[in-house]
Image (cartoon, rainbow, N blue to C red):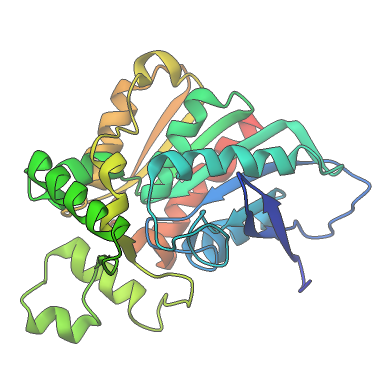
Amino acid sequence: MTENIKHITVPALAWDLAADLYLPPGFDEGRTYPAIVSVHPVGSCKEQTSGNVYGKALAQAGYVVIAYDASFQGASGGTPRSIEDPYFRVSDISYVIDHLVTLPYVDADRIGAIGVCGGGAYAINAAMTDRRIKAVGSVSGVNFGRLMHEAFSGYDPLATLDAIAEQRTAEARGAAPRVNQFLPADPAAAREAGLTELDLFEATDYYRTDRGQQPGGRTEALFARQATAVGWDAFHRAEVLLTRPLCVVVGDKPGAFGAYRDGLEIYRRAASQDKELVVAEGFSHYDLYDRAEPVRIALDRLVPFYGKHL
């Protein structure tokens, strides 16, 4: 255990999840604290923005925060590796809560969730059905199912599903797995290939440089295991089931991954009686990962939001 961080494992379906508990200043195991589950982006890991930015800051504000690696990713269990399946990603959140409610210093009636990028939409989706989540926040939240159905399938989801089916059959018969890389090797390679669209380039700058690169952040996925994502929708039935207090944070510089669009959509559709939309003006999706000013804008609203509802 390093100062204010406890490295733990959480039992999941048939394997363990690797997790970091960020503990408040002056932590006392004899007290009880509100807790927040922090969900990392697609292709990310617990040592990146969900942990070392938002997890750390919310712990400083007095919360026990748990940032964890998704199943099949980072240091967590599950094989084969590099699966990005929304159903597993959402169920992971409930397994993490299962662990939190066993900790004597966590108040089981004051548990919230927060997620960044794809993790934001996963947290929102989990809050629809796991009523132990009392408040949910999303930072640059992206509906990964919508993205897979549209841009990530070349706007031809049926052709993509046919290709996935063919690849999965081939792999079942012994073919080598097809691993799709989400990003270029580095910013220079992105420029050389003309891949300078705002979100794609800034993602490369975050994940492929010292700015945010971590061993567990693989930014890749097994193609043969992406069929469920093509047919999934993070916001399905939000008008009925999403009743928990909601805080949505987006930058107003929209990019191809669609966080601005998705943020406004879920804010409009959510049944929540208490919901907030925070627009960080002049900032982009990836600015909200770690840039000081937009992160401050986000936390200036998120901290009191959780203070009110947890």
